[in-house]
Length: 232
Ligand SMILES: [Zn+2]
Image 1 (cartoon, rainbow, N blue to C red):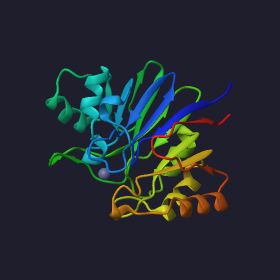
Image 2 (cartoon, protein in one colour):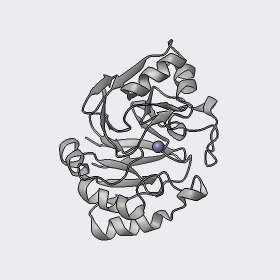
Image 3 (cartoon, protein in one colour):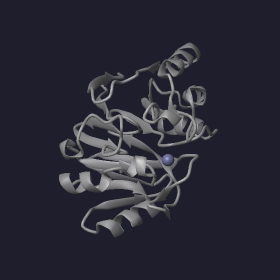
């Protein structure tokens, strides 16, 4: 069976992942200088948020309401978001915990980072494993490099890894290439770079390092351009 997914990078850490259902992760659209879409135009079945920082929660509440879609996020952040809008379905998970929605399994994994939301402590930040059944994607959230990425790789066996490379707040290209060695995905996609001057990065440095030192292929998406990936 073909293992395919349609991916649209909406800039920064925001991805739409479409396989039967459209899952949007970290929907930072309004205020995102690299975004090329309006939040009103996002069609999503599930909204996933890795942690509380404003460049990741972004328009999650608006998009969830506009699409009558559930949100999946880390537990303390889920509580904070519920206080903002208790009409939404917000699934609160913690590390190794998961929810299954329409056959899509979403599992929280650690990220080495911090998390706050509108000045409030928002619990632990996470990465998310989004398993469509036939294809599995790891969105690392914001994270530094950590050794348990090899466990995330060997246990969840993601086909695709979405990794921050912008440095300053997260891994840079060099650390992210080291992460690929541990995660061992078939495809690695860089994110969280060039949105702001502080996280300027040439994604080709990441691509060259990864493709020289691992078997993974690196795809550098163009913002708002949907592409289909087959990792069969
Ligand atoms: Zn962050």
